[in-house]
Image (cartoon, helix red, strand yellow):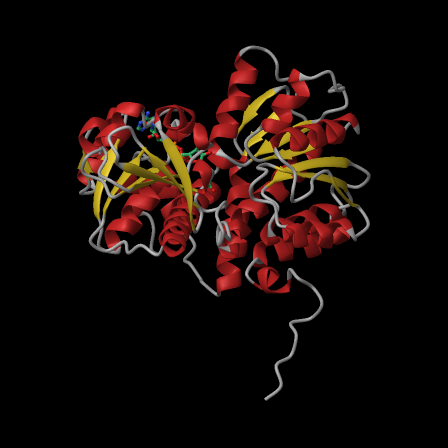
Length: 417
Ligand code: NAI
């Protein structure tokens, strides 16, 4: 039997799993809501992002794209996009952080009118450097930490445009953060390091959307799960969900694997590293390597060794070792076999970003941070359900009236249906 090539499109297999983006792309190619606009996009440059960037371009925009992380760029995807009209790369796979920063400045110097960001670094750079920002009309941000950063810009009066907090929309964080990151971070870590989840003690720092996804999936696979938190309601939720909630000082000597999902910094300290069992594995699924306090781990260590499969082994003064995964960069996006979130999950996130971009153009807003309008969030979910062939019920007129009435008995008595 002959094996056929799957077309000449390297994104073809990914595209199959992104029906929401594909349906919006077809619609936007007709209506061109971003017609004539220069749009700057920063994202992890892998196949799913490629499908999304093509959709932004097909909406009528000229797309200037760069990476949100220098570790996660796929060269073949950049090459595939760069060969097309309307898509201009400001990134190369081999760039280090300094070179990537310079490329981002070059992108901003082209004066994009819309920014679609991941982590808000591009927006922060625009305001922190001397590139023009007067032409900016809006920004849509897809991550938790990025939205927090933009809120900080709004609070100190720096933000001059409306920002749509796409991360905060239900169709994003309830799926992408919980299932996308939760599943892909755990799967990539365990497959790459050839570890088994069942029977391991896994410490998850932070019980937000991401941490919840990781902890729930780890336990479902047979791990003992310890959760650390700084927020009492999140901690209570973890406790009621059946995880063992403890301070990190208590978790440190007990864990086999440590995964941070806080968006914060130095969640692990030298004291924690010293308390860990020999060859404990630490990785980050949240924001940056700073969550693991990698700088402090380097200061503490007396020797380091690359032991393969994305692991750097740090020897501590007492002779014990700590294994750091993917240099502390995102566990689902960095490392030798990383594939990021499953395409089916990014489909809804990128769908929400596409609708956010259209909304920023169509709707006048004063500078500030806004939720994605509810009807757009619903639209993404409806398109996804339709793609999966899932039908749901519709509220009857009686049910709608009942939910909004206070004389409910009278309402029911007067209705036959
Ligand atoms: P979230 O705000 O829902 O949860 C963060 C949790 O961490 C909160 O409950 C907070 O109380 C807790 N926390 C903060 N500092 C802590 C500390 N020192 N020790 C223990 N817990 C602490 O945020 P979400 O949506 O869960 O995102 C978490 C991080 O993951 C963010 O940085 C976000 O940008 C990132 N993220 C990463 C993705 C990836 O692809 N790897 C995808 C989505 C989000």
